[in-house]
Image (cartoon, rainbow, N blue to C red):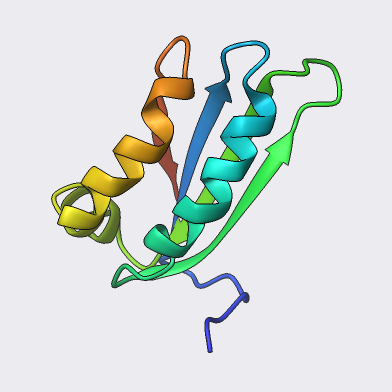
Length: 104
């Protein structure tokens, strides 16, 4: 079972996703498929997709990883990432900036 309790050295990935207007429904359907991809990666702890209340086409993706490398090396360099990319990347405009954070 995946732990939902924050861990001291856990890494939080944050990405603001601006979805091409009018494609939000298709994006959510694709994300429904893609979330099983990311959750299968070593070091993945949990994720959350939040929808903006002010902007219909804006979402925030929050993913918690055990280490930075679990995301940048393990996920981004995996064959699974290619499928994630195929499912989701064409919805973004502009392409999101992804940043990583740790508990202060």
